Amino acid sequence: MLPTSPLQLYRMPISGHCHRVELLLSMMGLPYERIPVNLLEGENRHADFLALNPLGQVPVLVDSNLVLSDSNGILVYLVQRYAPDSAWMPQDPESLARLQRWFSLAAGLLAQGVAAPRFAALCGQPVSEAAQATGRRLLAFMEQELQGRAWLLGGTLPSLADITMVSYISQAHIAGLPLEVYPRVAAWVARMQALPGYLPLADRLPNAAQVTQ
Image (cartoon, rainbow, N blue to C red; front, side, top):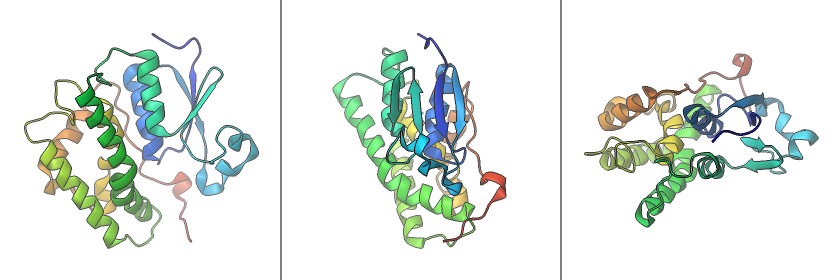
């Protein structure tokens, strides 16, 4: 099933939260329009954007008259709306529970331990050793989970668990967390990157800008 008109994705290219949505859109072959929102210049605080998401966060997805925010919520919507019987979102209770765990890890340890130090490094700011320790804890957990598995939920095809985790993990090295230490995680990233429709995550700030706080 395809939407009747292209979806609109409000996003910032360096954001892994936005990237996970764009990655799924690309892999599902759904037509969409990219609409840039530069958070570094405060475009997320403009009135027109706040009318879409009062929290001032990206990504935002517009599908006809429906406006959605929250990256993982958008992932669920896209699969349930346009590929409800696909492997992206298994329907058995155990797999759904395990998928929710990965969503929670993406919002917690991944955001704190990989996304935050990555962003600090991209901005030329000091990287928190405590954040890196959180990242190593997550990567060690993933290394264990991937033992004997090609994908985070097992099986022969990737799921939303893989989509929600791969964006920031693919650039863990920028956060000072080289994947050579985690060979199963590195191999999993390579498998994701080899899939049709995979898009790389941007690794530079807009116009090579530096952020000072």
